[in-house]
Length: 96
Image (cartoon, rainbow, N blue to C red):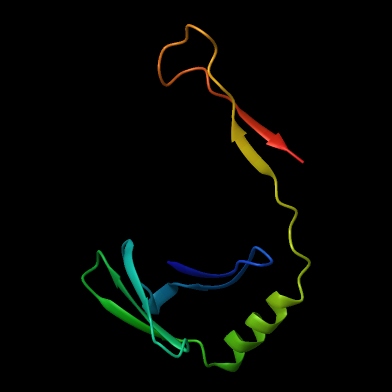
């Protein structure tokens, strides 16, 4: 499946899947220069063309702009402990 996201609000606007979607992994996506359509190519050897001009999609795009943006967490990797083997000892830290 392919998902359309509002990156400002971190909101999924639409999922393009189902009986008209790809039957396997989506490998590529290309947008029309005017931005109203896009095409995808997949492992199922098919090309799908989608339109963003339907009222349902346009309403979802408009609604996604009114959503309060999610709080972002800054994620950093700490330094490995002295003497640790390469590739071990890293921990994730979240900063507010």
